[in-house]
Image 1 (spheres, one colour):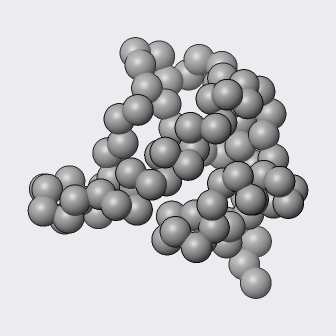
Image 2 (tube, rainbow, N blue to C red):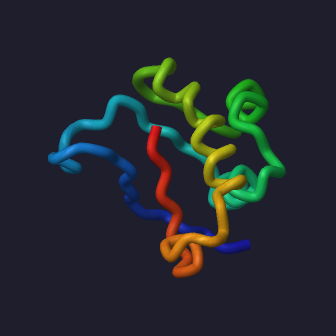
Length: 88
């Protein structure tokens, strides 16, 4: 098992250093499972594997984001370069 700890950010807008509306906490393995479609955010939250601090309504959009990431088109330049762009 690998222990990974760090700080990450996802954001939109002119000031990425602003305080987040919501902070999500989950294991790296569970995040990988979400990105591969093997774990849905709501069951993860209900079981305590996903912790939410802040705006719960903003956190509910996580499933939409994960669906877009999982089902992204593979023919774009960004996708072929290993990048994912999600607009919500």
